[in-house]
Image 1 (spheres, rainbow, N blue to C red):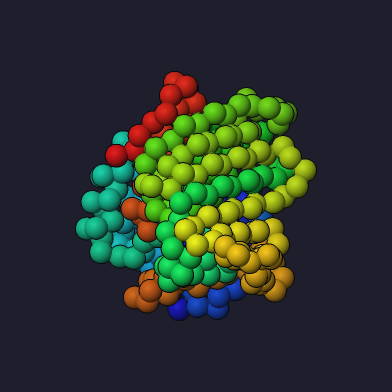
Image 2 (cartoon, protein in one colour; image 1 turned 90 degrees about the vertical axis):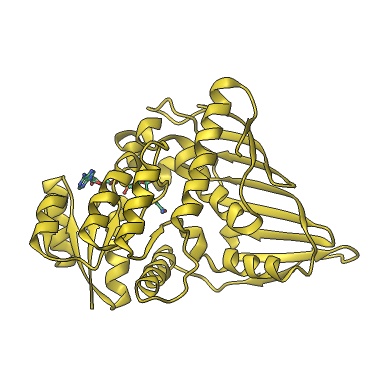
Length: 329
Ligand SMILES: NC(=O)c1ccc[n+]([C@@H]2O[C@H](COP(=O)([O-])OP(=O)(O)OC[C@H]3O[C@@H](n4cnc5c(N)ncnc54)[C@H](O)[C@@H]3O)[C@@H](O)[C@H]2O)c1
């Protein structure tokens, strides 16, 4: 049994705690700076608790640490954890700035332990299946893609006014919080973003001023891509289309399906995954992380892939503030 410490037991930390427990492959403990929350979570899942990282690291050797605090704290905690000699799973986005990236990369390399970043779309069956299909190359090269995505954020995260979401400095706003998932997934499918022209604005969400709506015209190398996202819309839907030389691919995440339509065909051919609970993706992700700890291959986002998506996040915010397209070398 691997010993795993969840650092930060808020919304996603509690989900990771529960889903790592459900793998049956580890013993989970919890750490959170909020004493009341920590007490509740510890009691709910019958796990040992620690009020801060220092006391947790002093108490025993951990096989892995899962960092579920707000984004601006991820890299400092990652370096402390790497020095402890534990494997590391870091929530998205990796960070909010580049300052600490190189220092952290060196600390992770020195520790020699497995690490990954929790961009959970890598564990959506329909995304992983499209990646394999694209690698097989039967439709030729991707030439254009479009993403239309969004949800009613207040319904899914009623506490949005009280958390990191309210400020860019702590990882907030639609670009760093929500769009980053989809851009990371598209980078996994068709390669890294190389140019970003982004328009974004606060259109509706009450009680915050960060952008809740984003339009991006991007290039992923030779592929032209458009992204449109809102966090106030009624439908909870994500549709991605990738148009290749010989036909198109469509992912409808909300319908758990992907399809192909080749030139000359009249209808889509769909591949549908049976109904899943939201936790199922996170249990699959926890299992993939434990596989990685055990030296097996995993589909998880690497640190370098997450650094590349951080380049996108920062370029997109800069494009909004300058009104200019930004190249990512
Ligand atoms: N993958 C996903 O689907 C997903 C979903 C939600 C959030 N996230 C990401 O997870 C991270 C956390 O988000 P959240 O919604 O759970 O936030 P949250 O505010 O609900 O929880 C964060 C918790 O971290 C604790 N904390 C902060 N600093 C700490 C420290 N130094 N030591 C110990 N505990 C500390 C806080 O007390 C709080 O309980 C963010 O980076 C966010 O972008 C990912």
